[in-house]
Image (cartoon, rainbow, N blue to C red; front, side, top):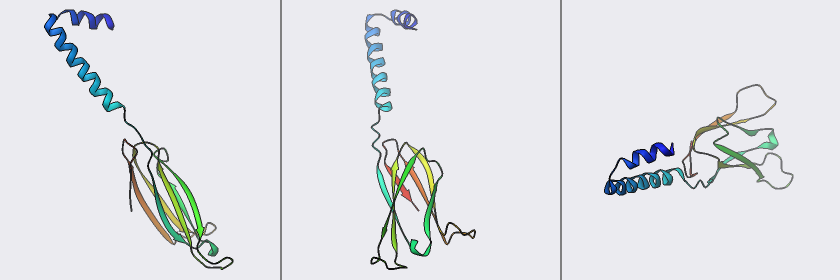
Length: 136
């Protein structure tokens, strides 16, 4: 491959070689700048209220888990020992790679076979720099 490039390069006169060298350098620099992106995995949260003391909880499914990951945290909002008080379910979504996916949350009792009491679907997109956009 190198010999072929050198043969082509020698077909030009001295002034043309300089111009070709500049153009090739520019094109290489341009492609290198496009290829080297700094992917900084952004994190965003989704907060959902629920009542796990009644058996209900939020369950989620990610359409493509190669694009994002999720960490769950549940905080009980009631007084200690109080049954029926709400909780806050916090889901931290972290970008893994660029692309689009969906997260489907279902609020249900895991032992029941009937449809979920509530369903929420979020569209998630991650750009080449790792920025997240989440919309319901």
